[in-house]
Amino acid sequence: MSLQSDIDSLVKSVDLELYDTSIVNENDETIYRVSVISTEITDGKRAGVSLDSCVELTHLISPLLDVTPPVSGDYRLEVGSPGIERKITTLNHFKLSIGEKVSLLLPEKQKVRGTLVKVEDSKIFVNVEDEEVEVEFNDILKAKTYFEW
Image (cartoon, rainbow, N blue to C red; front, side, top):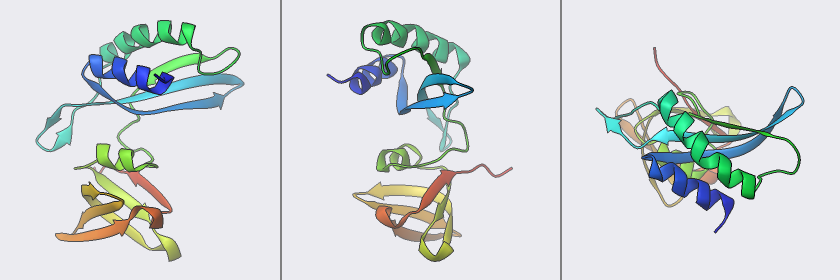
């Protein structure tokens, strides 16, 4: 099994879902970032991730990384939520964001903003003012979730 699938199994064991893993460098420090989201959906909205869940998951993942480090050299493990407004870069990110507000940038600066309804194969379906708009994943230049205040 790969490190990613091992982490995914640990995340699922605490009833969360793995959103993404990344390696970032900030202030001359290497960070291995594990982003998770809740599996719980209430009234069409995904619940938040508690700090206690992140701490518990950190304690589960840390020994795994002691055996299989994600990078060579020193790094810091950071487990948390990707946030309410986050980049969407993969089809899986889209699948995990169904029901949320999304903003898509398409070629020629065309924008689509609405509620993500479904993902079928490589097609993204967004409800824009009660009309379902279909967008091909490969046509999306940039995508993110957003929150309306």
